[in-house]
Image 1 (tube, one colour):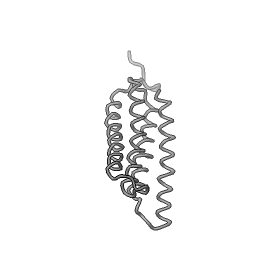
Image 2: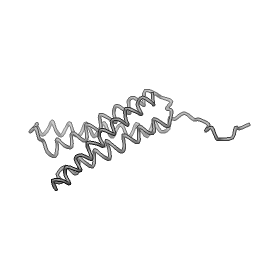
Image 3: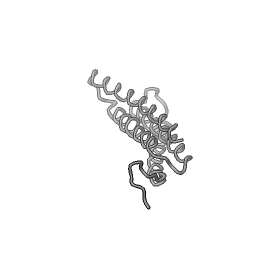
Image 4: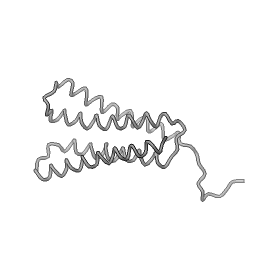
Amino acid sequence: MEQTWSIRLIRFAAIFGVIGTFIGSDMAGRTDYAMTPIHAHMLVVGWLSVFAWGIFYKVYKIRRKALVSLQSVMAMAGSFGLSSGMWLYFLNPFNWNDTFVLIYFIVGGSFLLLAFALFVVITFMIEKETPAHAPARK
């Protein structure tokens, strides 16, 4: 389970990394920094945090497998929701209702917050393993 979610999270993070760096390159090329908060959140939340979770799940086995799925789905939904909600909130390119946009932004951020909180819990649920190089106990 962890291996499946590990690669999903890493792929998701890679997509966010490409989009985030593209936004940064575009801003620098145009010398228009209106999207700086979106660029920063895409790289910190979508790239860095999601990538770190993917690596964690690659390295550790978790006792409660269902929590890995739940945390991963919440992480991806939250990263996407926060970043796209921030983009809609700051730029509103489709001229959507301000209340809808605000709620969308808040829900995305809330999912991400819950994903972080659940991850803290999961870190205490790793399976204990004896490293191969450790001396055997008698």
